Image (cartoon, rainbow, N blue to C red; front, side):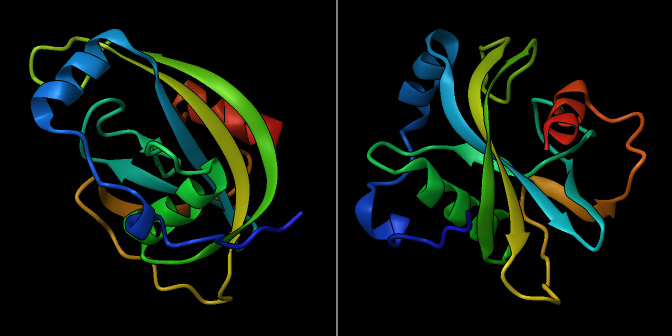
Length: 159
């Protein structure tokens, strides 16, 4: 099944939560997120993370779902925001629980995600992937997949 964006998420949502409120949420509540397993050129696109959690690890692009934003719309928003490209959704891999002992929020020492993984593809044959503030690089990793973060390996085993 391939899905395309249903709407422009930026027009429907008020944006990010203020820092002080975000700190309370991260400290006390699991975060609902989407992770993108983007298949390209016989492999999977991974980004070198620059922030916690999973700093300095090769990880799938992903992000928090905004209030009132359908998860599939979040997939399309994250792809545009983090890679500068559009994706089509091929399959939902399911929901995964990710527990980290680090966080990128001052005064918070852990993060808990309920992440839904989506197997995707770029809508353009020759995408022009750009980095963002969360990633120093993007690369296509080919099987056999070795020495990757355990959460990434779980996605790759399930795709």
